[in-house]
Length: 605
Ligand SMILES: Nc1ncnc2c1ncn2[C@@H]1O[C@H](COP(=O)(O)OP(=O)(O)OP(=O)(O)O)[C@@H](O)[C@H]1O
Image (cartoon, rainbow, N blue to C red; front, side):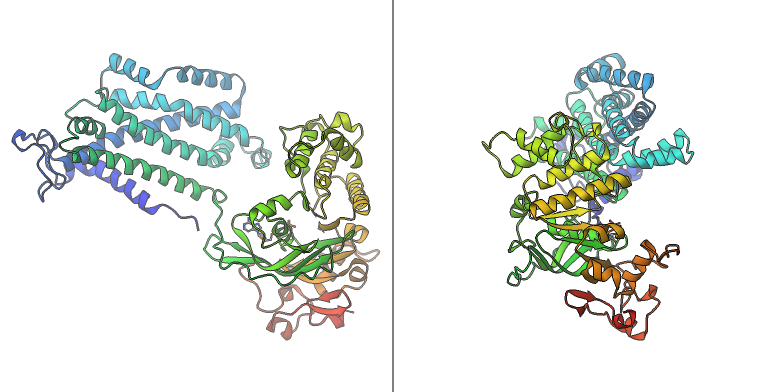
C-alpha cells in the first residue's frame, strides 16, 4: 500500500487551521509586555514560558505561524501557479514564446536572492506586500524550468499525441493530459519552495529585512532567542522546533500527494513472506530446467496475486521452447523472474531454476547481476526503446563486453564489428558509429541480438522479439536467431503470440493460461493433436482449417484476484463438466514429454 503520511498531513492541517483561527483562540496577547517577568519558566498559565520582554511564548509562536505560513505558502503558491503556466506554455508552444520565457528566466536567475531582497526592501520597505512578491519572484524560475522540462519530455508521448488525434484542443491537452502528468515533479518543487520560503522569511526576519518587530514571526523569535541562548535556551528551541517540524511535514505531505497522484511512482513492495526453502538437488538433465516457479505480485489493496503458479519446463542446449498464451497469462513475468528483473512489487515465492547445474532463484543480487548478460541474455520487444538513444550502437555493444570482462582486455572494436557483421548488418565498421535513431527497426533489433550474444550466453530469453517489426523483417530476424542458435548451441525461450512462428522455429511449446501451464510438449505433436481445449481454441483462432475464418475465443482470461475454484479455463470451455469446476486439475502426462491440465483430454483426442 502507498503509505500516505497522515501525521504530516495532520500537522500541516493543524498548523494552517491555527494560523487562520489564531485571532479567535483564547491566547494571551502576543504583544503584551511585562518587563518584570522576563524569561519566566513554563507554567499552567504560560505553557512555554515568557520571553525577554515578558511576552507569552506560546501565543507568539502561534501568531508567528500565521505570519510565517501565510507569507511562505502565498509566495510558493504564487510562484508555482505563474511558473507552471509559463513553463507549460514555453514547452508546449515552443518558438518565440519559448525563447522569451526562457531568456527572462535566465535573467531572473542572475540576481542572487539576498541581493534581490535587499533591493526590494530598500525600494518598497519591509512587510507582507514586499516579501510575498519578492519570494514568489525568487521561486518563479525553478517552477518555470521544472514545468518546461517536464512538458518537453512528455509532449511527444503517444498518449499526448492520441488526445490530439482525437481532436482535443491545446487547452484541453495541456490541462487534462499534460498537467496531471507533470504534477509529480511540480509538487516536489512546491514542497521545496514552501520550505525554502519559510526558511527565507525566517532568515530575512532574523536579519531585520522581513516582517518588522514586534509582529511575531518564527525568524524574529529565532533572532531574539539567539541573543539569549546561553541563559534561556528554550527561547531558541521552540521556534526552531516549529520550523523544523513544519518543513519536514510539508515535504512529506507533498511526497505523499505525488505518490497518490502517480500509481507507478512507488510500486507496492511485496513483503517477502519467507525466504525460499532450500532448492532440491539439481536434476541437471537439460541445459536449463525450471521447476514449480511461483511469482507473487503485491496489489494496492495490500493483498497479493499469483500471476505465475507452478510453472515448470526444461530447455536443452540448442533447443527452442516457445511460451505462448493470451495477454496477461504470465509469460513475461516468467521471463523476468528467471533474469531477476521482476518489478519491485513482485517476487519469486516458490520453485527452483537451474542453468548449467547452477540454481538461479536463490542467488544474491551480485551473482544474479554478474550472470545477466553473461549466462542469460534477454531480447525485448521494442528495439527502439531498448537501445540507449545517447550512445552509438558500437559503444553499447562494447559496454556489454566490458561489463563482463573489465580491465585490460584486448581492444574490443574488432569484436564489436565481428558481432555486427554476424547479425547481418552491412558495412559494420560504419554502422558501429551510428546512433540508434539512424538505424531501421530491423537493424536495431539485430543490434540488440548482437548485444545479447556478445558474451556467448547459454540461455537467451526473447520476449516477443519481432512484434514491433514488419512481416518481412520478422522472418529475417527469426532466421537469424535460428542460425545463431545452431552455431552457438544456446537454449532459447521464445515468448510469443504468433503460433505459426512457433510451429516454424520451436522444438517444444508451453501453453500458459491464467498463470499456469495448461499444456506442454513437442510442437509438432501438440499442434497436430492438442490435448487441452485452450490450446485447441488458440490454434483455431490462429490457423483455422482451410476455407474457414479464424474463430475467436469467447470470454476473457479471469482476473488473478477472482480465479475460478476449479479449472481456470472452465468458464470459457465448451467441454466443461461438474468435475472441472469442482477442483483444480493437475498437469497430467498424456504421453512421454507431453502433459495437459485437462481432466477430459482423452475425449479431445
Ligand atoms: N508491475 C506490475 N504490477 C502489477 N501487476 C502486474 C505488473 N506486471 C504484470 N502484472 C500482471 O501480471 C499478469 C501477468 O503479466 P505478464 O506481463 O507476465 O503477461 P504476458 O502473458 O506476458 O502478457 P503480454 O503477452 O501482454 O505481454 C498480468 O495480469 C498483469 O496485469
